[in-house]
Length: 244
Image (cartoon, rainbow, N blue to C red; front, side, top):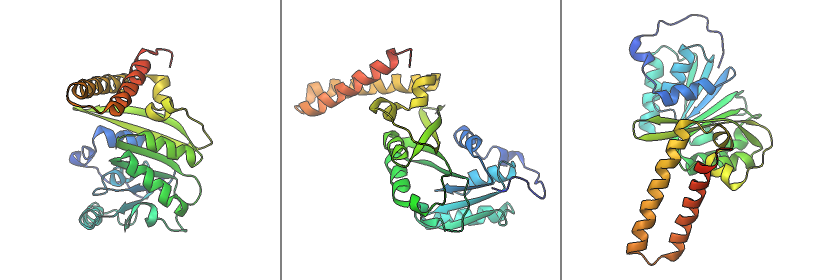
């Protein structure tokens, strides 16, 4: 991410619209001169960040051959091969000892997969770059692994896009200890209580109530019902706790 470009591209309107609000918000959290985007999906985020002078250089990691080839081609089409490098490999295995990375983005994957990528591959990363993570589902394991890695959650937000809610978690170097509620919902989310966060929990509460009602009628799995009741109690507590 080299912050000062030697020339400025004219950005066509269709390219400005290339990212949805979710990835534009992710881009706003990137810091430093060089960032690594894991699971880059056509390099949309790196191209946006470089062309809008948010960074100087980017590295794209892609483990699937087709998307990797599309990433390489998209970088070429936009004339950014000198600033964006595509690497083929699994997760953080694409990082080398010579890389000086300021931020890492991992977006559009399930929370358990993001946690596994960090846990299994972070040994390849020099230093403690900022992490900007956007799990599509189940963010609990992401926060847990951040805590294990010596990271503290410095920012969080929830975005609504159509029927979907997306969480973005930003973490920087620093020890932190979170209780179960903070790991599940996010310490910053609980403090800020943004509208989209509250709406997400309200919808989840209704979803869990429907699951419980169905189990009560059609199942003898009392352990599962007890588990759902615990989730419902926690959701109700979060929604009622205006002081969080």
